[in-house]
Length: 281
Image (cartoon, rainbow, N blue to C red):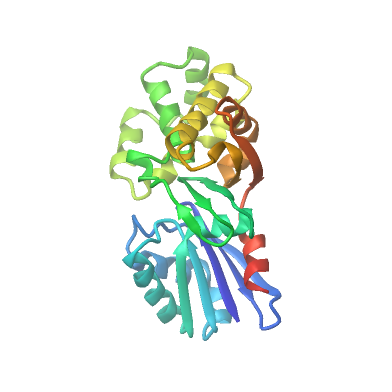
């Protein structure tokens, strides 16, 4: 039995493959970011949200965990916890960026990007990641992400840089989201990036309003400018995307890419289907 996990800040998607490489179980749990959360949090998520997976996968031969924030020594820490929790023979922990590159590019060179709660990108030569612009998290970076879009929206609302009609729509939709509540959730909340990204559905619902469409497109332009254009041959390679934000705002993403002279390749919501094929070979 093999366990595959695609972990983001908002959710983790899990798959269990049998000895015949067929998928036996798929489910989603709460998210986990290794850069922001203690590994105890991951154990809690598995035990509380995925008891069926834990029961079926205990004693599995291998775990392949691709996660946000899984870099350096954090990979070893997360791997040790997963191996112990599942009593697994081996645990392989890599970045969610490698998962995206394998799912999007296969064996071809290209630029792979993640636009979900957070954002990330890499240059991929068909076998390995050769360059990566550090995303820096939702405070210092994560341009184009759900968190950054939420931050841009809230800034526009509370600094009154958006039309009153948009502010009224926001107030009706989120009556509890006054200044004090927003500050509390962003600066003292348990999952501030996920909280900010929770406002993305509002942007999607009202994307037909020119000011909203411009806000989203401008954020994607900022993503390309800060993360993609410095890669070697960026304008000659396809730029692929994984993530809910890329999926739901594809027209604005394509518009921003065209303005930057970039070519969009694949846009898909999640990598799990491709990862199942990859690890089932």
